[in-house]
Image (cartoon, rainbow, N blue to C red):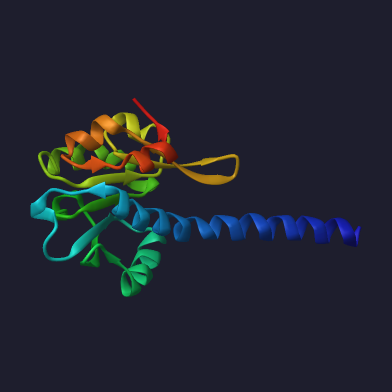
Length: 168
């Protein structure tokens, strides 16, 4: 009986630890996206801004990353937005699952801007996100919607396209 309890406890800990790693993995993915996506000239001066709407553990991971990394020659800054109305110019905007119902309002707010929208809920890449995080076979993956990214006036490296799950 003790062995079964121990096995169950270990299984729960492994499950929790892998879920706890998701924000860290997502921050690494987001940083690497900066190497394979090109923004227009007006987005290449000043800070490279990664916005996050709402509460998510990813914000802490992005702040840690921003302390030691750059996007090309640009310093990375992380901006937290509480409401859609607060969103302003940023290179990347991350929308956590609990704010995905705001995607339509965010798309209207960012209309005409070159902001890469990244989400983490099934179906969001078909609804306007450029990149959507998904878990496939217990591994962090990402969907990419080329049409949406092109609409944001961003250029995608073929290398990134080859790594993605393509959504049309």
